[in-house]
Length: 381
Image (cartoon, rainbow, N blue to C red; front, top):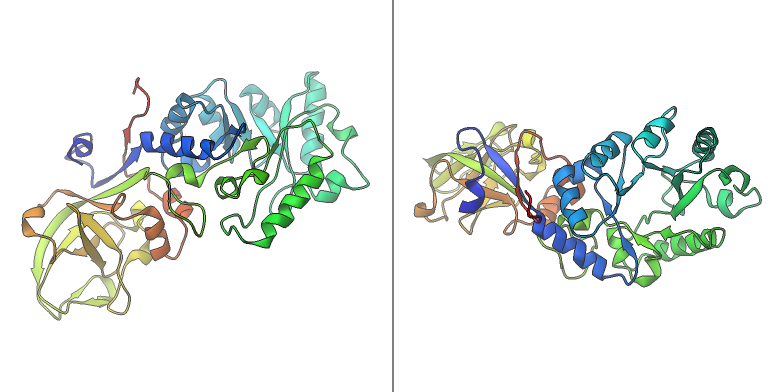
């Protein structure tokens, strides 16, 4: 912890996010190890789930990852600036009038509709060369993708695909976090049916949870996302991933309050004993979700101070939270020190559950005003 804090600007930073890139790479290697001869790609959309696309992509590239998925063309452009040779797929598809942008930055659209196929095919003919793209088949998510009948029905896409290099066919699991959900098998059957139309084309079906469903879901390329960042993707099973994201806030005040006094907006929390209350300078403006506050009627989440857990009491404010440190040894408390809000002692998954949401949202809501401090997994940084 002391080594981490030395990298933080002592006069400026009210909190920070410590990103353990060595843990990220370890998680990538674990997920890759769950497959046999598959390519293991990485999903780094939403600024690598809030942790910094540049640093994350450099570490994963160094670990042997050469295929990446992002959501938008702008994300893909940023990724291309740090990796000149990777295969980069844009999940949101081919935006209208954007084909030349994809070509300029050597991007691969994930084609989700006949309109996108026609536009990309027309551009390929204009460029007089077949350009790579993925075909996304909707096997049940009903979000983006070509219908099964458009792939394996009576009106095939053969003529529309003549000018395109179909580099990948893919689909997305809707219920993979539940290993026993029957919809997994149904989607797999649908995808296998569509794959017969493209028997020589590499196929991708498994997200983070899908990788853990077993070899039947792996095909030629897997696409882990949330598991890379340390969140266990299944609703069951033993957590086998390392913590990547650690959130710290600065302790800015310690005061003693008497039983019967209330804490925070709405006076929702009333002290039942004399208490030592610490104020920490992180709040919902930093992405510390408002639902993590507590009242006397609900159990609180905790922070960790020098290995001791301390409950968050009262409402989460924009920039501050209150923590009951009465049971933390006073010798472990000092104004200005940093406390762990999410990390090894307070897991990302537990915080998400306590907030009534998912780890994806916790990560992607982390504010840019919190500096990211990196434990490097590659020698030049």
